[in-house]
Length: 207
Image 1: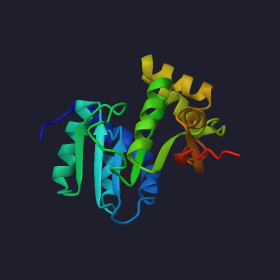
Image 2: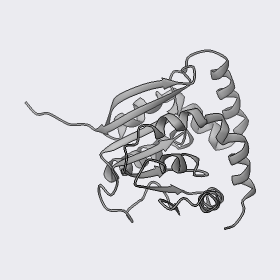
Image 3: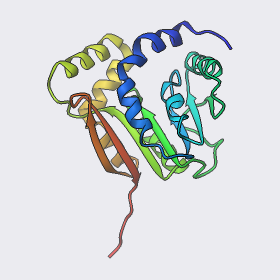
Image 4: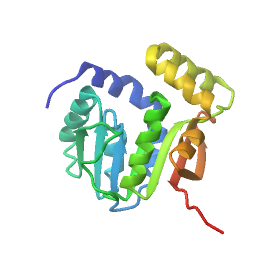
């Protein structure tokens, strides 16, 4: 397996900051479930979920991240997890309802709004149960919120612009509504900085 400097940086410095959030998401996976992890990054969440899931498929658009995820999986001899270099806005390589659960952690705030909606629609096509963990909107004021804003500001460029737009538009609630999804569970974590939302397709009832 290859080595990625960017992937190594994320593995060492970024992943540990949100281990608690990932563990909570992983605890929501039922034994034997087939899971797709959207924008999986270094595969940290995928590998935790794989302890309980039947199989986990992690996908990301970054070759550095997928290289790192595959290297870690091979090192840990994780046989029920696989990683692919794929665009989450078009996952036509997978048929409808190929998975029990579609998961994404701290990715939605990085996307432009139209991209986020496309990703959520693809997730709802692939699985009936959707779990999204991302920044809470609005965040609860405090040191954790200040740190989060500082980290996002330091990223600069498109990343920070998309984060600000995500927060200004209302976060996950707005994205879910535009994608035709209903938030059915909502759990704030990390001093109110993060939220874990369970989503499903909206059911329209005619009179």
